[in-house]
Amino acid sequence: MRNNTLIYEIKFQKALKETRIHINRINEAFEELLQNYQFPLIKHNFEDLINNKINLAFADQIIYRFSKAQDTMGAKLFKTYMLSQGENIDRPFLDILNSLEKLNILNVDEWFELREIRNEIAHDYEDNEELALNILNSIYKHKVELEKIITYLQK
Figure 1: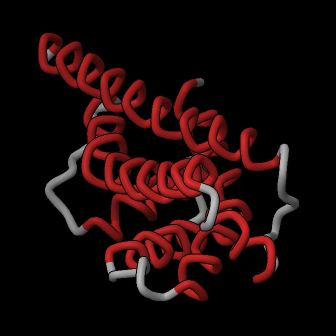
Figure 2: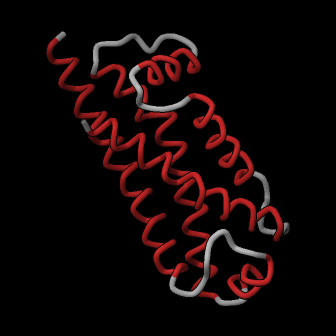
């Protein structure tokens, strides 16, 4: 059993590192965009942003990395964390989230808000400027929640 705990801890640390990389890339891209734009973006500024290839690349990076971070957390990080703590993960994902909420690691309602943003990304937002604008603004608003989760898990 002790070897399993060590294996789960190693997997958890790997998932944590992967998630941190995604979140760091999100923050770095926002730092670049904040040099030219104020968030939340308004439609006029968003139109300017998408007409600039460099700024558009930062916006795409934010959206892509948010999606990857959210997926990694849900598919790997939470489960490996629970396993490293000796918990059973052979149960519905909502039960895992509720356990994490009891540990003050996350808020289940906030997690589902993050998941909804990720689901919007999965749809073809590139042909819908208003949706893309809303996604960027939502990520900017909610990225702190991802950071808080990571902070709690690092303790």
